[in-house]
View (cartoon, rainbow, N blue to C red):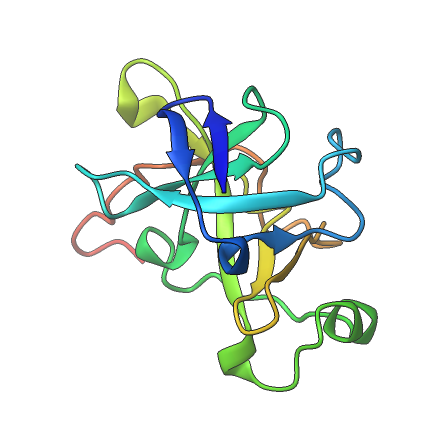
Length: 148
């Protein structure tokens, strides 16, 4: 099928690549069908593009590339909704807010996107933890030697 996209114009996608968000995404609850599109020049980032609305698209990345110690527990309700049975049923992505210069861009670690790639189901999961920010730096400050 062909869809119009925010960043790439008209593209062809496979029906089997569509991710269903049964509850939509907060702020975009009417948008329930998305597809992940690769950025050809940058494999660290993708576009989560609405299938129905070309203007609804989010730059996303795997937060573990930048924050390898990022951790949280999914509640049972989310596991059931997304039909998650084991760890391989989970892909975690963070929405990126792009800024100029790029080093000032941020990741939303407070509300990750949880996707079951085997069932093509997704949900934005809002964490009830104060440990993570919705505006975490995309370029975390390096640790200074001798400082812990």
